[in-house]
Image 1 (cartoon, rainbow, N blue to C red):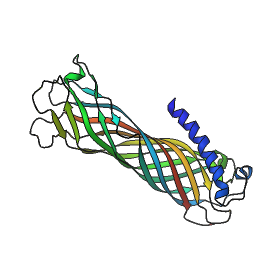
Image 2 (cartoon, rainbow, N blue to C red):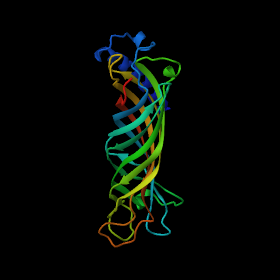
Image 3 (tube, helix red, strand yellow):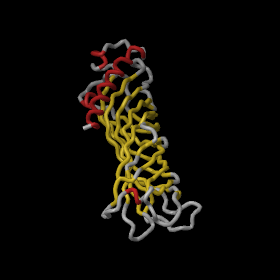
Length: 278
């Protein structure tokens, strides 16, 4: 429900902000004209797009498998150190100016630092106090994604400077976890050091995204188009895992490093510029 509320809020905010921005961009059109016909320049053909935004993350399904063959799976409740991080991207694509355009983008997120207290032990009656917490970890993602945009008003023949759109993307994410640390809880009486740090690791997973937004042509009709986009997108980067080998420690390796699922809700601004002029 929270995601659907975010969609509605961002769509309303995007359209309102872009409509308000039209006069400051030197456009003489009113809001009615902005949604009208034959106002925008021709944008048909290849384009480049540059994006920058803020990402609110959600971390879930976190766990690790301790070294012992009989040790149970330990589940964690990850807590990010900050609520937001940055996301940036660059894309090259093609606009058919019939409601559809598509591009291929490279994206990269900022780094999240986090901790993760134990919240449960799988198929074992022992309490979390007899196990360990994750007391330090960090993750970040980058990747390649193909995106398809659909502007319903343009598809119906509108050539307005203000165009709402929906977007979906599919690609791959390179997920990286830095060195991570597990610390014994107070009732953990197993042998070995209280604090152990394990190596980081990098993996690739399927990534996808859906979203909506609005675009506004900033330049006057007949000039080389420069288009501002405001969007909300939900990104799922798949899972990210740390390494299994301890650092500076010859004791047994973990069977499965600290692992979690990783998504973002991103609010962004982008500039899109056609590469040819009609």
